[in-house]
Amino acid sequence: MELDEIIITRAIVDEFSKVFLDYTDVDVALVGGGPANLVAARYLAEAGLKTVLFEKKLAIGGGMWAGGMMFPRIVVQEEACRILDDFGIEYHEYQKGYYVASSIESVARLASGAVAAGAEIFNLVNVEDVMIREDDRVSGLVINWTAVEIGKLHVDPLAIRARMVIDGTGHEAVICNIVQRKIPGSKLGDLGVVGEKPMWADLGERLLMETTKEVYPGLVVAGMAANAVAGAPRMGPVFGGMLLSGEKASQLVISRL
Image 1 (spheres, rainbow, N blue to C red):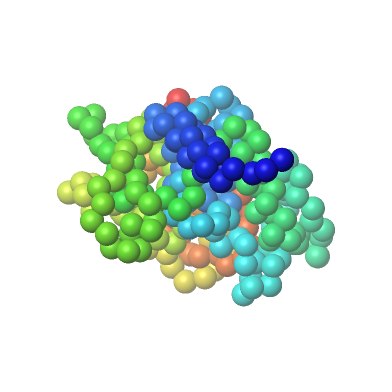
Image 2: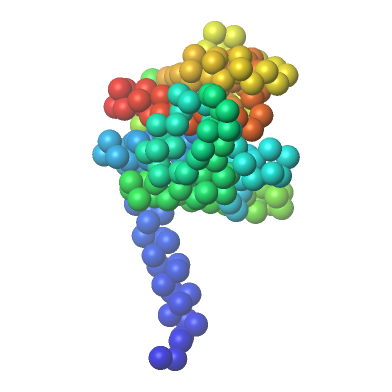
């Protein structure tokens, strides 16, 4: 069969446009495609919530792809192994309490699990603002192409309506910082966005279950962004806390909706 380039072009634009328009009004919008949000996206979609995830980079997976210093392996503690099992990720015990998995397989299966559950993922999309209405609640996102941000182009954005938002943007805690900057006097959590402390894997992992929470009406923070908001330590290439944080974030959202 002879291929027609125009049909190929139309197929891509037509199908993307239909899906994009369908996801301009959702139950949950997740910002950042790291491991915490990929876990959350799957569980939210499985719960029947209309779920969309926006990632500003070309590839999803956040810092998990590179493992530790570009050695593509990650460490997961025993408490989170059940999530690896849930996503079908292979791992083995290195020594008691420390389990090792391929970072490449982990990202691939987390993404596949989220998509298979019904979550929609849009990459190369930058979130530049939030929407807040009279009820003083985060009610949506303002988005643009990442290329617009990189090129510093004056291009007006579009909007996504969402009943809940999850900030999983890692160390930068992008959405939380936007809210704190644009809502005078707002304090996310108890102290506002504090910024992460130096690496302390054990403490950072333990605190992550406390820092994963709704920090502003309609806004839940997960993964490294949660520790950055609360001023907890960074953890490095141990990812059990990230997986468990994504699970907890999804549970918080489900309980609200």
